[in-house]
Image (tube, rainbow, N blue to C red; front, side):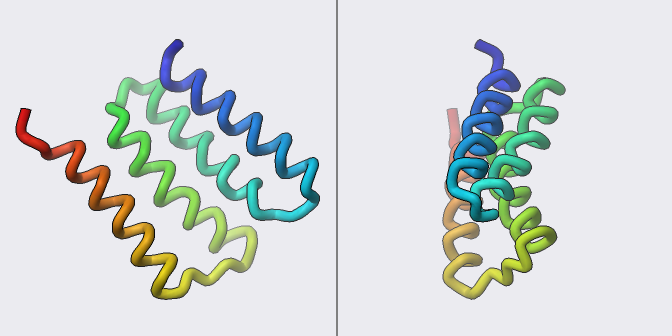
Length: 92
């Protein structure tokens, strides 16, 4: 299965969860999966897809949910991005 299909299925599942819970916390993550699907369709590596997804999740939360990340949110995002960088730049 191509990566972009996975991202679209993931976005649809999160959107269904958003409808079921009636809170706007899964919607931001579902919307962040869409740019990751576009990047995947363009042929980007998994690490770039994850980078777009992580940054997009925080950006959508800030833009649409009035979410203001505190230092722990930013530390968690930095840990995720460090993991992406480790995968991307690990010697092969």
